Structures are given as C-alpha cells and as structure tokens.
Length: 339
Image (tube, rainbow, N blue to C red; front, side):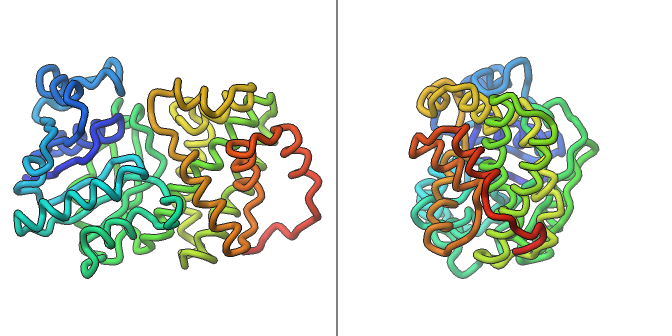
C-alpha cells in the first residue's frame, strides 16, 4: 500500500483519488474548501463537482497540508495552473519540515502565463531544483466523468527517469485505466496544455454551426500548431504528439460535451462573452489561461500558431469570430508538413 496525497479535490482530483483508492492505496485528498472536505469524509460524495457519483469510501479529505503530506510517498498535483506555484511553495516548506522527498506527479494541464513555464518546471523551481527526475506528468484522453464511470481509458505517464515513470504506471494502472510510459516529459505536458486552446476553437466552430469537415480540419491543423510549439520552443520529440497526450487528448477534448474548454468555446461561438462563460461554468477553463502563455510565446519567439492566436484575439481583444474565420481561410498558401 502506497500513501498518496492528492492536492486538489475538484472533479479530476476526486476521481483520480478514488481510482487510486480502488487500487488499494492509502489516499488523502487536500483542498481549501471545508464544505467539500466535510462532504467527502461524511458521505463519500463531491456533488459540487461530480453529481450522482461516490468516491471510494477509504479516500479521505483534509484542509491541512501537513496532514496530507505526512507519510506520503507520492504527491499528486491536480490543481488549476494558476494555483500550482503558490501551493508548491507551501509544499516545499512542509516537506522541508518533515524531511521527506516524495515522488511528485502532476495531472495539471497548463502553461503559466508570464513565466511560460510548464508545470514540471514550476515544481522543479519551487520544490526540487536538483531533483527533476522525481517529477512525473500524466496526460491523455481522460475526462473525469468517463473515468468515474470506469470507462476504458489510456494515459501517458512521462518522466526523465524511466524507473519513476514505471513506478507510476504500476501504482496507477488498473482494469479500466491503462498507463503507458514516455520519456518525453515536456512533450507530454505541451500536448496536454495546448489542446485546451484548440478545444475552445472546436467549440466555437460548433457554436457557429460548422460541420464535420471544419472540425476535422481544425483538429489536424491544431495538432500541427501544438507540435510546432512543442518541438521548436520546448525541445519536445515530434512523435510524442502522435500519442495519447497529443492526438489522443486532442480528439477527446475537441469532441466531447464533458470538455469544459469545448463547452466554453461553443457558448462563445453562440455569441456569449468570455466573462459570462467563466462566471457560469462553475469550474476552471484551463485553455483561457494557457492561450495567454501561448500568445506571449508566439509574439516573443515568432512561432506560427494562427489558430491559437485567433482564439487569443477573440477572447482578449474582442475580435469578431466570423472575421477571424475569414482571415484564417484567406491566409497565404502554405505546405502542409512543416515545423
């Protein structure tokens, strides 16, 4: 039995925590919402995030970070991107006090605006500046709602240390979720983060009434943008984007009503404002944060990402969706295969 501290008890954190408890691990969820913690402990439910679903009753919750981290062999980050750095600072303080160095696993999919750092970079800076091999990222086509119903799911687990990736693979895998190891940590993270931007675009197309051809074109060209950013800026391996954290996650996020990014895009395509969408979504829409970091990178490094840049302009410069589509389709001809 492995003690695992899950930092973040929203939908994905709760489902992963319950899954890990299903696997026979000692799981404690950490969150700053006392009512959610109390509900998990008393009723084994989390109705704010996951209706009509129950957690494994052996998974408990706490609002005390030291309680969560004491004895933990694995610390799983399932937090919004904007919260990772501040929580990581607090984790470092507690781990220094406890004198322990657990394996860090991130299920957060984002790039930090301003620093343009991946989540693994933030964890290295704040917790393990000399132990980057103790960080593993998990990413792939996996919605909390589907995993909660024990739908068959496949996810990549990536690390610069093969043995740590294999350890996560062994502990996390079961008869309904299968993990595959990958040595391209940054590539797996880039795929998981930037697909949220493309998912917003996919939702906008649906909201505008476009059909299957448009969606297929968007996903294909969106994948080209993800790979271009991953390879040219982050040094990722091109083949990673043909895998679970690339095309796999892109497909599910661009086509499923369970995708908050897709739902946000659909509402924007139907004419709603970003402020309205975010206020009424009830959960974090990571693509709206990641697109800021992508925009900054495109401007600074002259990376050609026309879809992502169009989404940034629609969200933050209030440009017209129809005008952006017209501009996109009127761009100068380009070869299909290029980085």
